[in-house]
Length: 470
Ligand code: SAH
Ligand code: SF4
Ligand code: F3S
Image 1 (tube, rainbow, N blue to C red):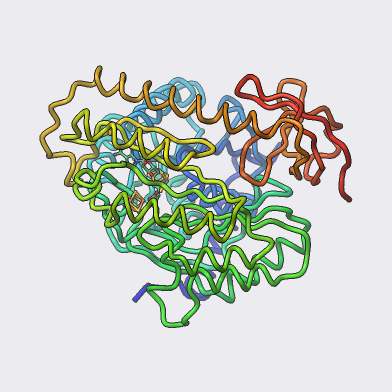
Image 2 (image 1 turned 180 degrees about the vertical axis):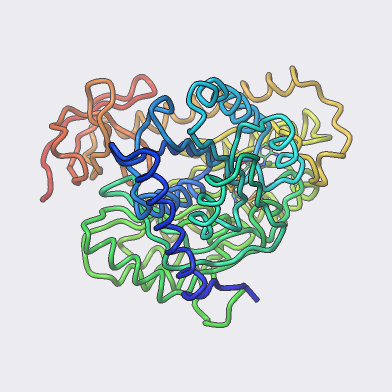
């Protein structure tokens, strides 16, 4: 059974919020303290950071992008690949000079990386200037941890190894004003053999459907246009609970909320994505016709070694079924190249699956060994250089397929959400998740527009805004 943090328990953080506030009034009376929060990794971390920022705002913090002027520098970290960890170690190391110049600055590191015992140990030994280290399961205790870290000179490190909890009622400071992240579940039970996530995020915990619905209703009433439901495996939503609401039912209920908004979700696992789910999506007009469905490998032996629990044929059947009931559905995916023991022939099965499905885009990764996972001790004879060549081959193939796909869109009119300003253009996102650059006033960001696609020669599409919705 998932442990739910009780409201009384959460209430105990309130006095610590006051104490932190008082600490800064005493030590920095001239202006409110500033926090610089950097987030690495997936949207789950982004959503966690929004809660951490919510708690910081409650404690009287303002926010800055500049570490140099911050009173609190906090890194929310990711452990999914070696590269992600190296970046964090490098960036944390670079903060040492700030701490030397301004000893009153508190440097904190949280998230998936430090949830690994060997990393927490390394933080203690090699980064003593980091004042606070806390894992993914104690985010709701942040005010207390922050206060205690401010009171002591040595590093406070709290990374309990447990299955994780659900804490409701934490204030949220959202990064966006028209796009929102809505976690529906935490953790993962799948233990894909290459993946560190189940170790650092604990077991699957689904939030109560009524709480999710209330949050979704609030977002819609606040004018959010796009709600992305988050979980490591959203298709298994509700399986750990007895309320009987599964992912399809949750989608139906959110879809029924009145208002003009789009529902997206990530990530789906093919073993739990069913024809019935696609039937539901077909019937729910607010659910985006884009599906991120990681396949990881196109070869059955490799899939088995990865413990993915579906075959290439089952994956292709699912895609075929989805297209039969939702003809305009588009797929994106994640792929790992160079899993231990993968042969050239097996990699070619990945290439052929990519050709067969025709994805809008792919996130491609070279396999990265993660300490403590089963794959990390599997024989891995293929050189890093060869894996690099395979990756380039795969990305070249996808670029060719993407270009063909985009070319078909030229001349068509599409509904798109005007999202952000970039290089003098406004970037608009189509239903299939691809991006088109248009000329529009930045004041229209956050609104839907009808866009004509004019050009898709390069990797970036360009278009013209025909009309903008209210
Ligand atoms: N829960 C999601 C995604 C988790 S991590 C899912 O199951 O799809 C995001 C992606 O990172 C994964 O889909 C996988 O492609 C990649 N990934 C995870 N662990 C990795 C590793 N050790 N090396 C390389 N890529 C990895
Ligand atoms: Fe990792 Fe697999 Fe869980 Fe995704 S489903 S988070 S890849 S273990
Ligand atoms: Fe990284 Fe943790 Fe997400 S390991 S990918 S931030 S769940």
